[in-house]
Length: 397
Image (cartoon, rainbow, N blue to C red; front, side, top):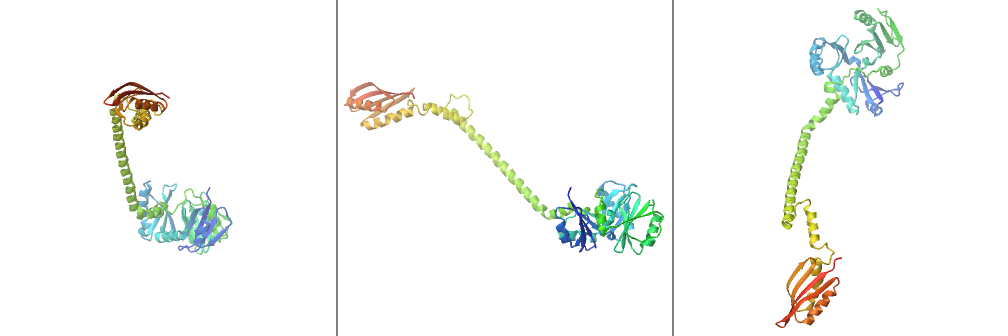
């Protein structure tokens, strides 16, 4: 569980504060909010505000919709308040057993001063409640604690008031007498001089300072948090966000536009790729009309060309035979090629040459190339030259 720090604001200005860490329950510190911020690192921040600045009351609100309730409460309580409702902040709590909504009322001026002071000290409060609502409370009992010429009286889960110490002896008996229902007893923390009351008084030791009691008795479940409406964390984040909203929208539109453009480009490229694939398939079919099915035109074409070449390394292939005979034919001198035909790994060459001796020399040179079988199929003299036909075969590797 995350540790907590309890900060007690000692005035509306909040220039000096007290704080207590729940893992150091007996060590109350005092100093500036900046000092408290150092101790607050990594902790949940609970802020107790002066009860003298907060009015705790209730309102009969028929609706259970929180938004409508927040809009109606100021006007329902308007006659009970001395200030204009526009100058006041209304924080809603839970409904009491009687069905009335618990309400805390505080001036906007005080809320702004507290929030601004905390913000300037780099403190982000999670909960801000009137200090009086963290006094210990037993069912059907009231709790009274006195500190610095003031008395804090908690009369219920979300009710209580601050009483001047001088007025306490005559005001407390009156409050008890007029209470409906009356408390079963009043628990008094510390040495407070009181007259007799209509109910029993139970006394308990008051830890010094009061923040020790507030920290140990604090119950977050059902706490009446003042950080609502304009002072909620969501609203504060919204205020930071609003100036950038237009820029964020433009950025979002730009990013979306980029995605759309990229999508269009990808679609166009896919279309172009399909067209090229179709064209390649057609070229393959045009080159090899006997092909019945195109799976991978590029691979199939390579296989067909390899077959035409006789497998690449086979000496019976046209390219290999031509490479083997071209050298001797060009070096023989006065050789004229009449025609060349190729079939099934065999080359037939019709040529004219100077004489029979040169023809025999050419045959020997071709045979010396290796893996070639050369046969003179015919030779006849005409016009002082010899017309001959050579049959050349290569051996399969």
